[in-house]
Image 1 (spheres, rainbow, N blue to C red):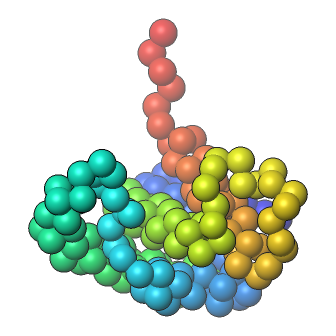
Image 2: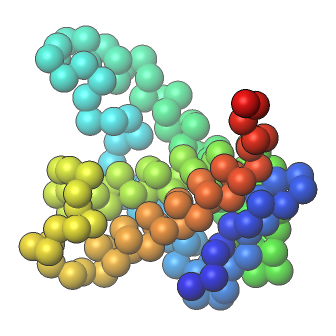
Length: 153
């Protein structure tokens, strides 16, 4: 498969095929139907503190998710012809794809980083989508990494 993201002057170039645009257009619905905008527990050992965290942060997290999804959908519509994402847009893509992966992983009962090598997981469309989103996220991270300046020795 050809890389979706490539480093380019001014940002990261994203080019998608029609099937990729159609598949990735489902990310907002997946995330929205995935439930809460916040991680499972901010304070695993303190239910009261965790409840307070959720009370104060839920609206902010929901607004951030909504803003990220708006950027994803706007840039996705231009991806067939190729579009250069600036830093803010690339970060919105990273957060959105990461959120979608968390939702899918949660649905599939993924509990460790070794899920990709787990031969006991049943092959399902959701598992295939999780693999694909992992590949998309990797492609974007690689492209962004290539834009970083060389380390000074």
